Amino acid sequence: MRIRALVRRELLDLSRNWMVLVPVAVVTILALGLPFLIAIAIPRLTGQPLANDRDLERVSLVLGPAGELSGEARIQLFLFQQFLLLFLIIPVTGAMALAAHAVIGEKQARTLEPLLATPVTTAELLVAKVLGALLPTLAIAAAGLVLYFAGIAWLAEAGVARSMVSLRTLVLVVPVGAATALLSLQIAIVVSSRVNDPRTAQQFAILIILPVSTLLVAQFLGRVWLSAAVLAMTAVGLVAAWLIMLAVSVLLFDRETILTRWR
Amino acid sequence: MIAAQDLTKRFGPRTVVNGVSFEVGRSEIVALLGPNGAGKTTTLRMLAGLIAPTAGSIVVDGVTLTRGTGSALRRRIGFLTETPGLWDRLTVTENLRVYAELYGLDAPDTVVAHALDALGLADEAGARAAELSKGMRQKVALARALLHSPSILLLDEPTSGLDPEIARSVRRLLDDRRAAGCTILVSTHNLDEAERMADRVAVLDERLLALGSPSALRSRLTTGRVTVRLRDNPARYLTVAKSFDAAAASDERTIVMRLDNAEERTAAVVRALAAAGAEIVEVRQEMPALEEVYLHLVGEH
Image (cartoon, rainbow over all chains, first blue to last red; front, side, top):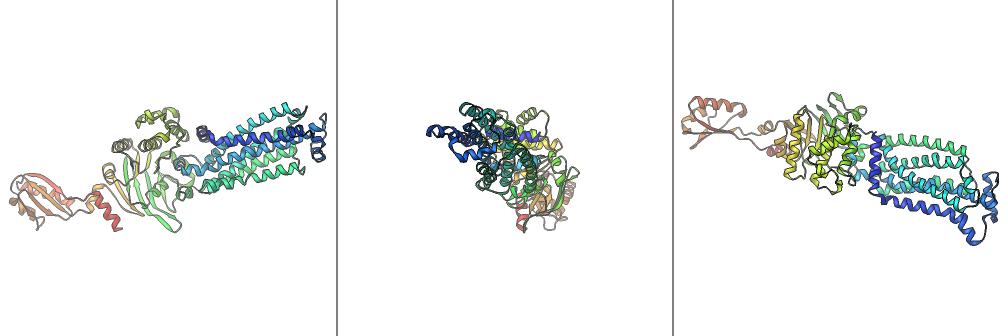
């Protein structure tokens, strides 16, 4: 009940200040265009099909048996699968600003003290802060994914869109995507409750993207291929890590320092 | 009822509140006075369960305030912070509604509407907090503190910066809450307000320097000088007066004397003069203003 009230407050506030979400939406749209540029536009403009590239053909073998897909379609499928990971990162980078500002912003607006004087617990407050940043992020990511799949269905080789719809994609997008965002934003909240300047919070929070970026690059190099089972386990691990991070957040949330020493 | 026992707060090597003990009962208003940095806000924050005391204990309605009991006890406390702390982009109603839900109130919309009416804020219900004047913001913050009908009210400078009309309406509201059985502790710099509003006054400057009713505090600095104005010639009754103070003197209309323990002996003087046939028009015991007492206490410290 209390979490719901706080989340609704966050979303209401955001709806009156929707410009803060514009950069997230812009970056998502740009990120959306990138795979289409690489997998479809450039090969068509240059007249050089992807299938001519031996390296791409080699790394695309991680997908397993090709089935009915042509060589070109197979590489397109590989690329579009890789770029799905981007959807784990891009919206989160934008939401980092919201999460990093969550606690320090309340403190600076002098709204934190009356809030802490209510029966709300630290855990409730922090969960609400995370959800307040997560929900708009997921909404933008979901809209981006709809556009992504619509674009693939419209522009990619025959069979690519159908092959994209798989258990792996579902696991990657739903539990892994949401859990990655949840964990990242929770870390950003920790940062927000430990520093007394929003700029510092944002600088630290952005570092959280690095591990996911490393994974993205490793996949592109064909070094790592995360199967649906591995991804499912990853999602479980991420949720467990979030719970641990939530407990850490509660322990590190020092009401006294926030109220008495931050200006 | 709220009771503090040996309340101490240190921030690193700096002691802000030192061994403070007091109680505020039901249907009582206690004004917390003290210079800037005296520990008033820190004391209120400890009583509200926002920060933990370094030593000492706090009992709220018979329950000791601890980390474990804090969340439940905060339901009984309404805390008005030093600054209103409203969410600027939300309307007045939206601001209050969030708090109504945080306190788990049934029918939050009705409660909010009632609170707005009680504070004369109904016309501002749809206004965004950012658009309100300072006085209105303070009233909304007060409405927020009262929303859940707390049995204990902790108010940090509730009338600071308010125009006299709004300040008066706030005082009336506090009177109403007191009449309803509420325990009220108010921090203020306004000595006149403290004297008019509070049943007792606590003077704090790291330590509790004094605690008592405004008149009791004022009598601490009394000179014992009593002036009796008579209808007839005072010289006729000077002998009676001298039996209380050998140095008593008179002029055309008054007898002036200095009494030890004037608070108790003035009545005896009046009785003696009346028995001697004097027609007494006025008896005035010279009392210092609360401001003088306050400055004396704080300066002495």
